[in-house]
Amino acid sequence: MSTNTVVDILEVGCFQPEYKPLASLRSGEIGYIVTGIKTLQEARVGDTIFAGAEEYKHPIPGFQKVVPYVFAGVYPVDTEDYNQLKTDIEKLKMSDSSLTNEHEVSPALGH
Image (cartoon, rainbow, N blue to C red; front, side, top):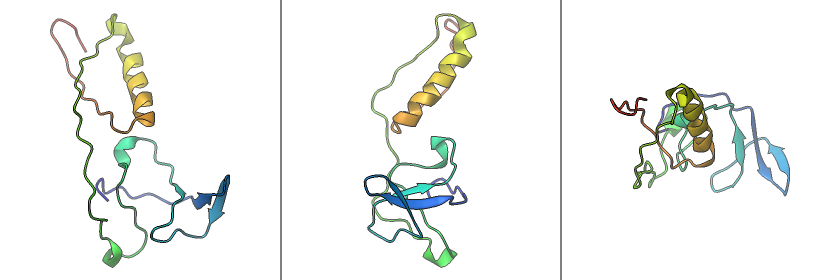
């Protein structure tokens, strides 16, 4: 809900101990939803997912965006490696949803 992303739900299920597709998940159940989302910007950890009519669109109380507390500037040694660094940071974000990045340009260090 926080990103206003609309997706098609491809599969819903739970772990028992392997993936077991179900018709639906109810409130309080733990499971998985396959949507085909490709980037973490389209969904946030702890956010509310809903399906159905607009009258059911109420977020679960307590959701907050992750606020970073450690800041670092990372630049490639060779500016030609910038695209590889950018790709690698995106891959890292897939395994650590608390990681955020902003692209910046330094007159001394480049992109």
